[in-house]
Length: 115
Image 1: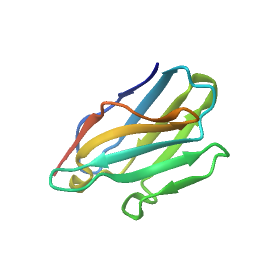
Image 2: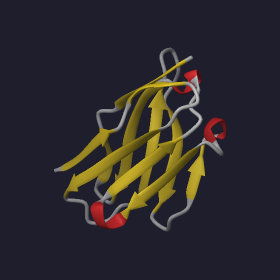
Image 3: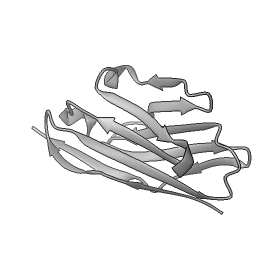
């Protein structure tokens, strides 16, 4: 009984910003990893940003300097702040958590960046 719910997607002009949120609920116990993935039309799913249990972060090369992943441990929530958005950032963004019981995914939220 683990559920992930994303929010914050939408339509934005190039150069704009969005902030995605993912709330994890259920039998969590501990979170080993939290991350944001995206999949654009015709492309494979890729890891955009991740944060480990210890707080270490990693980013896809294409978003370094523009995106920031953060978390609120008390609220079991992970965020993705996206700045200086580009049309090539258009994709469905999905939240992922790795728990001792397995891996869990949200349903995704659409981000569309217009030129």
